[in-house]
Image 1: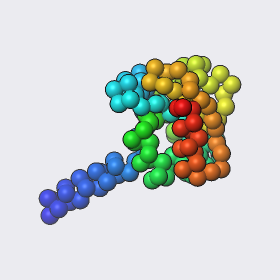
Image 2: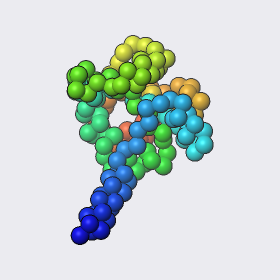
Image 3: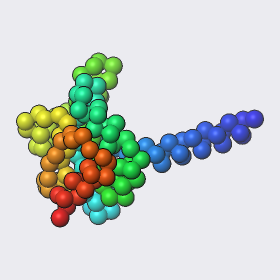
Amino acid sequence: MKKIIAIVIILFVNVTATIAQEWETDIIIAKEIAIKEGKRIVLVFQGSDWCAPCIKLDREVWSTDTFKKYAKKNYVMLQADFPKRKKNALPESQAIANAKLAETYNKNGVFPFVVVLDSYGRVLGETSYKRTTPESYIKELNTFLE
């Protein structure tokens, strides 16, 4: 019985890991991965627990299977979250790192704000929430790569 439970747990974790969007939270690691794998970085500034357009962008684009599959092969996803509720508070080190990212890439404090970067952190393009399909959002992100 224990073996069956262990197998079910392992299968569940593997399936969840395959489906889940892989978000980096450290720009240094994101750059290293981007250089190593020849990918661009998609930096997302969001307020996950208060920004309605951020929540919609997550639900309508980032969390879709279409986007997750494409992103896994083509982008390094970097998240800079700015939650407001105490229960969602980030560790102080992460809050400081996100603030530094905002100083560099989001000086106007726009939410959501999506910045496409090359593997060295240079800005290639910027966008925000749009009510669109994951496929159209991917096309827009890819226009910054040309």
